[in-house]
Amino acid sequence: VKKEGLDIYILFDTSKSMLSEDIKPARIEQAKNMVDRILNSLEGDRVGLIPFSSDAYIQMPLTDDYQLARMFLNVIDTDMIAGGGTDIGAAINLAVGSFQRSAQGDKVVLIISDGEEHDNVSLDAVKSIEEENIMVFTIGIGTEKGGLIPVFNSEGQKESYKKDQQGEYIISRLQSDILKQLAEAGRGSYFQASMSGQEIDSIIDKILSLKGRQYRSDRIRKSYQLYQYFLGAGLFLFLVGYLLIERRDKK
Image (tube, rainbow, N blue to C red; front, side, top):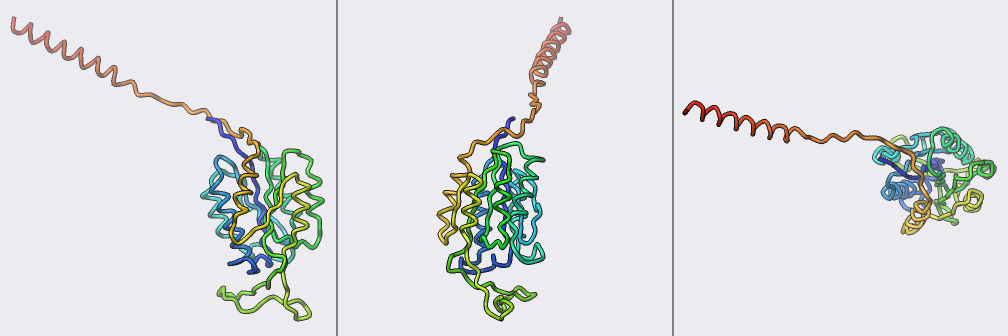
C-alpha cells in the first residue's frame, strides 16, 4: 500500500490584532474557517499547525489525521502565546527545521496572517531556505481600512478596545506588502481573504496542483480463508464412509 501527498505546515497568526472585526465575525474565526475548508479538501496529505505571535511553537506535527487537526484548530486563540508583536520569521524557521527532520514529500508553508510584523525578519527567513521543494503561500486576513482591536474580560465579554500609550484607539490594518513579498520569495502565491471565501477554492487548487511524492509504503499480509474446501472434502469422505458401513451391515 503506497501513500502519496504533500507535507503542509500551516502557520497561524495568533496575535491580538487577529481579534479585529473588520472581517466578520473576526479575523481569527475567518482564518479557522479557511483552514477547516482546506482540511476538507486534503486527501493523503500530511498537515501540521504552528501558531505564532511574539514566538512560535509546533502545536501539531505533520499528520494525515484530519480529525485530530480539527481538534487542535478549535483550541487556537490569541492567548496561546504570551507577549505582544508578530514574529512570522520564527514560525517559518520552525517549519523549515521540522521539514528537515520528518518531511518526505513536497513541502508547503501556508502563512495565515494580517501581516503586522514590526521586524521584517520573515523575508530573510524565506530567502535563506535552501531546499528548492519548499513553497510558501500566504493568506492576508483583514482589510486595508482596518478595524479596532477588542479587549475581553475574564468572562469572554467585550468591554473596550485596545489603546496606545497616548490613549488613542489602535486601528489594525492588513499589511499585504510583506505577505506578497514572502509568497514571491517562496515561489508561491498570495491570496486575500474575503467575506465570501471564494479565494479558498483558488488556494486549494493551487496547493493541490503541486506534485506529491510517495512518503509511506506499507506491506500488509492479507489472509484468505481456505478451510471450507478441506471441510467439504472431509464431509464428503465422512458421508461415503457412513454409506459403506451401512451397506456392509445390511449384507
